[in-house]
Image (tube, rainbow, N blue to C red; front, top):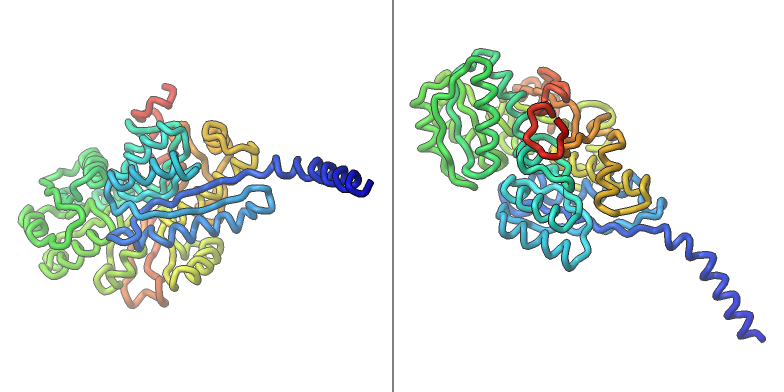
Length: 401
């Protein structure tokens, strides 16, 4: 009799908990980036921290969403990134891949994600092709792109009289896209491109390339590179007295982490374009303080902020649809407006482009800085519709013309 009662109670208990279990969704997110090379500071472990903070702030567990985060180093190599992405999707049960700086790697992961029908939220790569000719229904390009960088830094420097340019271009997808998009802005504004030189990626010695740029007598030397390559280029340009000689450097992609590495004495006066700066307002300052405590005191880059923002929006879509089916979640991400303390309000377009304002900053002089990481002064705001390529000009086949 007691055994029957126990069995009955067990069966009843199973019936009572099964609806709750049925509602729980398990999500596995992979943060794929450079964890050991020239982009490690601007992405790396900091992007993993940002993803974890998004899960924490969303209170995912309380909402029946169990989130596991894994990470790996793609070493800035497309073949390494592709192998990891395939293993994550095919064997390890990963549902979405976040971050992925290095455009050549991002374009490869973008294609694999489409084949496997998963989700890719890219924060780290720059190539505007991710929402152009290589666009995918499975990818959202979150933080910035080469088109927006060109509109911001390229446009501002040309309008300010920098009407002749010479490019130092990292020789892979990102550098090529950045040179292409910036050249278009310069020529449209009436300027001229006097030349360009392709530099090895990654590189350490930019001396011969800088001497070519100096000899071109271009008013602006456009650095179509990023991370450690940009830092080395700027340092070596200082050694050659290029800026002192009257030419200007355009850091077409410069992060706060780069300025930190350079120091204000070297970086002062650089004009740059970002979508996020830790000291912009109370919301960005509060979040960045929490982030820094987990990241050895280092403030977040816009790439790391984008990982947080993208992860948060993905979780909102999972909660709203009660599903992690890729097509369902992607449709909801494009339907729901985006809203978070780091980027404010925005949208995700049909081509996968996340829309938000971009900001033109100038790096402060040492005398203007009030303390550690106080590096930027705002010069202008680029409204989202002006910063990113209009849908009417898009090469993306997902866009209805």
